[in-house]
Amino acid sequence: SIPLGFFGGIGAASKSGILVKGSNYLEALNDVKYVVFDKTGTLTKGAFKVTDISSSQAEISKDRLLEMAAYAEYHSTHPIAESIRTAYGKELDEARIEGYNEISGHGIEVKVDGKRILAGNAKLMNKEGIPFQQPSEAGTTVHISMEGTYAGYIIISDEVKEDAFEAIRALKQMGKKTVMLTGDSRAVGEAVGRSLGMDEVHAELLPQHKVEEIEKLDGKKSPKEKIVFVGDGINDTPVLARADVGVAMGGLGSDAAIEAADVVIMTDEPSKVAAAIHIAKRTRSIVW
Ligand code: ADP
Ligand code: MG
Image (cartoon, rainbow, N blue to C red):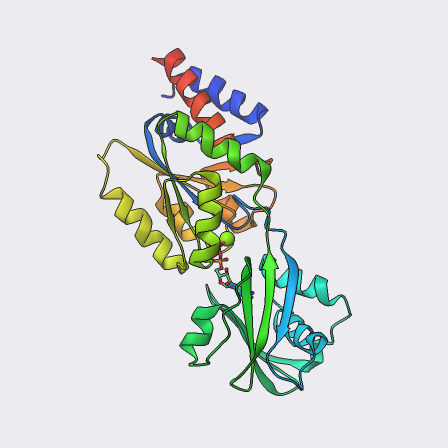
């Protein structure tokens, strides 16, 4: 049977916008060693804005490059895709698109007007053997190629959530190790991690590599100590399921993430992880 005090704890959490799916997760939050965060949509707003467009071919204008990218991203629900479509702003004709393929952790491969377009990160260009330009400015870079030839890049910038600073500070004060796992570039991941004062940053990870990173952390702790993973669920449901306590953002998060998670933060504030640990501690002191 479940000690009655746990219902008090779950109730207190839900009043703070934290849905805990069972008393065992509240109990597990007492023994957390690592709090692992996804970056995009979790520590950052996930509201990207296009901040630069650079064409590397004289006959391709910036507008044309943005149009190609918007068509390539037509079917994608990734925050990057939304920002590119918003920046383009014009209506898109679905009939011009064929053979859409989203390559997880890389980007998009698609035919637009019968031409093969790739839109994604450096990993995608490397995979296809397309030499590309490396921009010097900060932000996430989406490289674009047409028919196997490099066409240019679009820079997209995201903002760190105000609340993320408090989230990391509070967890560090409790003696927790804070880790970021991101599919984004090392430059962007490390800049965000450094600004927040996180203990570890692992970047350029594919979704399955994120699970491997959790397994590595698992080997660095005692069996009693727990790992929390906090994500928005775009590409990270396997990690949410693998962690001892999977925490999803309820607002931005996908339905699949909310389903896979053990704890849901309705307000999308990462600092609620520290709040949940506080509630768990208070609950244990009442129950036992
Ligand atoms: P994160 O771990 O930061 O949430 P994701 O795993 O969702 O990142 O994506 C990893 C990287 O893959 C992105 O930073 C981007 O470079 C590339 N990518 C993913 N989806 C797209 C897309 N629709 N268009 C362009 N690039 C994409
Ligand atoms: Mg993500």
